[in-house]
Every structure is written in structure tokens, then in C-alpha cells.
Image (cartoon, rainbow, N blue to C red):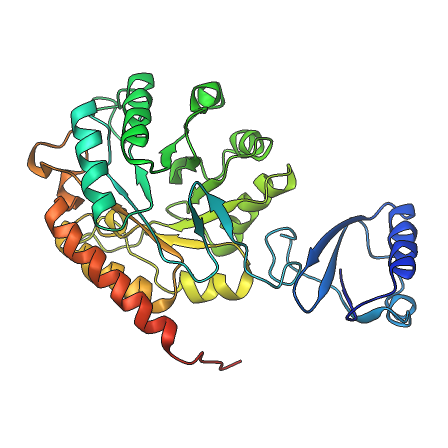
Length: 341
């Protein structure tokens, strides 16, 4: 249930409403915006009298919510979530560019790529330390050593680190990581989601390769229900019958999730397509559709990459793309909003 308060409500009446609701075992999540305060009521609200609450002087509106996700629901939190990370923010009208290699291979490689992408306008670096691979014979990442190389790249460039956590046991190693990525294979690993929900670092949650929007948002709910509100959703392509591309990029995810949730949405066109030549078009389409950021794989020598070289851009090609993405974002931001609801 959602209770929308009138502007400048009487503080004593608000406190009285809160005490009454909590006395009935209801948990209240407050969303305080510039023009409106919303109470999201979590718990057994079936016995609450909507008419009684609506009649209060401080109440503007009361609605029941059918969706099972509450914390991630835009109805509970009308304003977009903006997540501060280092010297940048994700959401709130910004275009966040995150780039780097699929796998960290050496200190020289990671530092070199980090410096190159920073010069192109990137505000966070990515790089895999622990790699979930379909084949047990594929490169699995350098693990703890890769985290050290990422740390050096951060020290050299000042860019925050985004890297994937595969298991709860690895969490103590992530002290210098700024954003914890939960990959597609772990989107419904609920113990892992709860664990990252109990810590404070922002979490980039990739969509499961065959997951619905509601399943994806329910996974975000697992994180948020443990106390961590800083979740970034990442569309990385879904599995369909098409085999030409690695996955099928769901561009509809952007407007749909903008309607359903207040959480920022980042697009990964590298994993969605699996082909470097398709990445620029899909990245531009995502910006036009209103994404909050892009996660793009960049490698200094894609032909000899230890993983996913076929979908990685060289730094010089990425530089051209980044400039185009920033220009496109600035242009689309200047257009009047379109409302068709």
C-alpha cells in the first residue's frame, strides 16, 4: 500500500500516523521528494481501512499495490534514484560510461586501458577478476591478483572499479572495489543477493539470460530488502532463438523499467551482441531510448584477449564511440519530454 501525503503536512499528525501504522506491524519506507512525500507500507495491509487513512487531513491519496516488489517499485519511490560513486553519480540524467576488458590479464594491460578510456570520458572502469565461464577449460580469471591490478589502475586514474562477485566467500577481497557486479548466472542466487544487500557498496545487477522484468526486479528487491538501496540494473541481452548474435538485446527494457522502477538502468551492448561491430549501433540506440549508462568492453589487443575478444573495441575505436555517445546524450536531453500515458 502507498500513502501519499499532502505538501507541508503537520509533523505531529505525520508522527501519529506512523506510530499507528507501526503499531499494526507495518514497516514504513519513506520517500521524501521535492514536492511530495510517499509512505510505502510493507507488511499485511489487507486489514487497513483505506477510507480511514484517506480521511486524514495530511493524506492526499492512498493506493494498494499489486506488484510483489515494493522497494524497487516506482510507486513507492516516484523520483529517480541517483547513486553517488567516487566523483560521479549514476542516474539523475547523467550518462555514465563504464569500460574496460572482459578479463584483467596483467597490470600493464589494465592500467593502459584505464588511462585510455578515462581520456575518452569514462567515469568507471570494469574488469573481470573472477570469471564464470560456460566451459571449465576456459580462462577463469586471475582472481585475487586481478583485484590488485584493478587497484593499481584505480590509483593511477582515480576511476572507481566495477567487477564481478561470484561467491560470498570472495566478499572480504572486495574492500577496494567500488561497485559489486552480480552476473547473469547469479541473478537468482538469493544468498549472494542477501549478502551484498547487507553491505554498503552499490550493486550492479545483471539480468538473467532468460529472466522476466518482474524476476529481475524481485532480485533487486532481495538486495534492497536487506538495507542496500543502491542497485543499478544492467540489461545484457536475453536468450532467444536467434543465433547470429550472442544474445538478443532487449531495448524495450529501458522504457519499461523506467516506468516500473526508480532504479538506474545501464546497458551492456558487448555481451548483448557478442560482436564488436554491432556494439556502436546498440550503444547509440540505448542512449536514444534513455538509458542511464553503458557498460562496454575495451581491450588493447582483442585478437589475443583471454576472453571475449570478439566483442571488445580497441581504445581508439571506443574513443570515437564515446564522443558520439556523449554528443547524442546531450542532444536527446535537450528535447522536450514525450508523454503518451
